[in-house]
Amino acid sequence: MMTIGRENRKHGRFDMSIPVRVRAAAEAAPEVLTVSKDISRGGIYFTMPEQMESGASLEFEVMLPGEIFSGKPLQVRCRGKIVRVERPSLPGLLGVAATIERYQFVRPQ
Image (cartoon, rainbow, N blue to C red; front, side, top):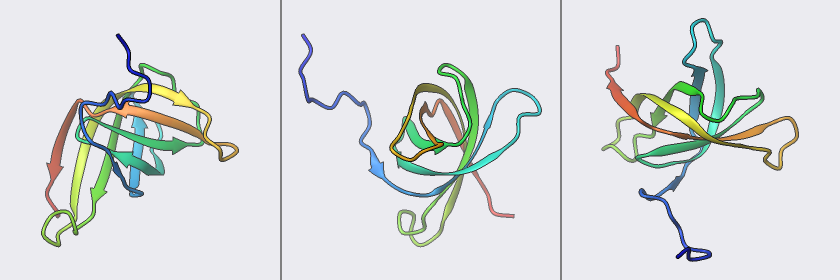
């Protein structure tokens, strides 16, 4: 039985507009700098000016704000897959929902 209007996500979302560096996992794919709309432990939503296919593998990096981690920003490198592509309200941009399947914390250099 399906309940209409009920949230079906496994992880709570955080409405968070943070920079995201994204590229398709394919070799020699160009990197695109964009901004997230929301993020959770299991996924992220951001906008892109380029077409990306549902099911495609991605690599992306985010810098989580210091307010979350005792005043120190935290860079996270992730791999995931696109689960949904949609046209948001902004012309020329596509909304992309992707899973976060693997991640690693990147130490500052």
